[in-house]
Length: 352
Image 1 (cartoon, rainbow, N blue to C red):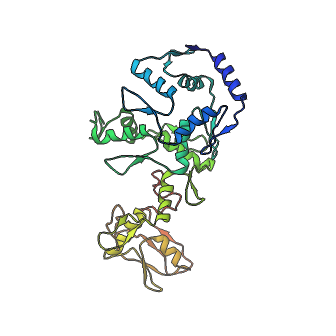
Image 2: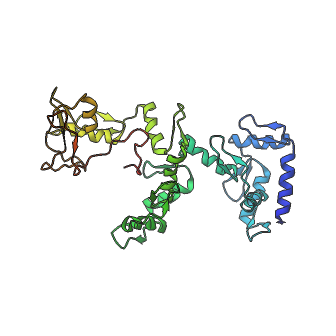
């Protein structure tokens, strides 16, 4: 059954003009007939009375079962007249025609994005809610889409035939190898059109663009806060649950974030970084010292520690304030410290 673009547009225009007085009480969908509403309501329940006799699937409508049986028979009677694709259901053909017309009738209520199918809109809505219903059974990672989970599972069970020629790493997908090779070449093909930054992955550029647009698509379901990254929302949710997954192995203290645990571990070492000589208070982070100090008082160096990557060469000064209050604050360029990020930058691989 060939459907021309003109036929599709005429049919769509007619459907748009049809009055739909029957509204679903569980969602916003409306229908022109009560029978269609009744069939739709079954999608909100587990009731699927029409069972396939060739597999275990069942369906809420007889028409759904009829379309499904075509997949067993290999029937695809609906042909697109603009390309060579064929479909087993007319609804799939209608969805496909939108790839030619560019129509996106399903609009997100929380942002300006629109989609060609309700299914794609529902997947997008998970970015606002932070919902990731597809959980890996091998680790604690979860995903918004089943296809993302399937790709991830390959990292646990599948072979990794794609090897990097410059190091010993293997990958299950060629696209991941291509991205990895950029760490060796330094290639950053994705350039920001509003500043001079560039990125090795398109997803990183897309995340960066939110700094320019101010877009914060990830909304907390328990309060009104919104975030630009899913990792920020995940960290924020811990403030509601009081979850503290990062446990110190030397005492019974636990923390919400890993960087808090790393800072705490330094308190178990013999030396701390800085001491405020006015009251003999010691500090691990320079930011804490600067907040504590009201004016340019004496600060002396107390040595170094070897926690993580925060190793400091004791032969070079870390930070020092000279005794003369008119002298300026001096910072050594050789210092390496752990980044202290605010809430909106925590857990962000682009900011670390």
